[in-house]
Length: 159
Image (cartoon, rainbow, N blue to C red; front, top):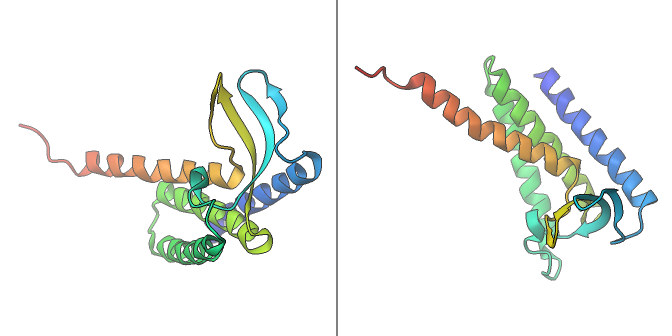
C-alpha cells in the first residue's frame, strides 16, 4: 500500500508546486497564451466544486467541501487497504486521493481552489482546472473503465 500512498503524495506535491508558481507568476484572470486558439494559463480561484458548482454561495460551501474531501479521502485510504493485487484500481484510487488532498489543502488554507489550466475552442471555454483536478479525472475514468474490464471477465461464455 505504501507505493500507492507515495503516488498520491507525488500528485499532491506536483499540484501544490504548480499552484504556487501559477499564483506567483500569473496575474489573476489575465490569460497567458500557451497554444493559440486552444490553451492558456489563467489564474482563477474557485470557491465551489467542479465547474464552479456552488461557487456563488455565502461561504458555507467551503467547510462542506472540506468535510466531504476528508470523508472521501479516508474512505479511499480504507479502500486502498482492502485491495489484493489489483494494480489498476490501486493506481486509480491513488490518483483520486492525491487530487482530493491537493484541493483540500487549498480549501483549508485559502478558502478556494487555485485553478490555472484553461482550454478553449473559439467561444467555448472549458472551466479552468489544475493538476489535482486532472488526477481526479484520470483516476475516476480508470475506475469507470475498470467496471467494463471486470464485466467482460465475469461474463458467461455465449453458446
